Image (cartoon, rainbow, N blue to C red):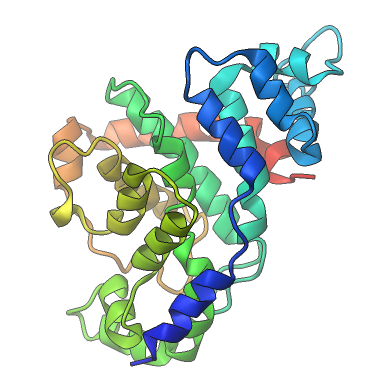
Length: 282
């Protein structure tokens, strides 16, 4: 087993989550916050502003007149879409490198993150629940721990996969046994260091462990299912593949059938096409 202190030190080396984004996301969660206050926070962030205007002026909105100001962009997009753009603009840098340990191509982990977030939202809509403010963020960041753990997984991959092939370990369990920690726990510690809300930290920590999820947890089961669906679609699949234990309970909990999942996948591609520009962030 590797010295876990080395992994913890790697967590501390990650850059902090951008202050501008954190402030803006907090404002967007406040229904009484003014547009002027929001603009005063994000107008000096070039990436966010550029992506707001890029999406507004894309073919998907089909506006007769091009939007040239941040204020005009906010009117077109609304708070929910803006929140997604801010998250996308600020988190992409954490997912950019190639993940050799998990054998995910450059950009693959990022595409998996975005796809999981979109599917999580679609599941929430499908089951008739109002979308929890933390759902999209938790789904987007559920695998952030892989960014840090990648090098260590690569070093011990043969031992990890041997445990999986023996049949009595999921990839997560084998990861934990060989490294002393798994990517879900590392991800939780990263978001704790960024002072993210407790429900997001909890979901990242438990997104493979439904047996530990409480009955009043509204987002972890959805993120779990979104992750499984995204992997089954081949988006961001690496060496770990589908070697995680599946649970039918989450399907039963929401009354979902195979047909529901098929329709979610169809809806996903419509939404995914809409955010293609955002995937190529400036």
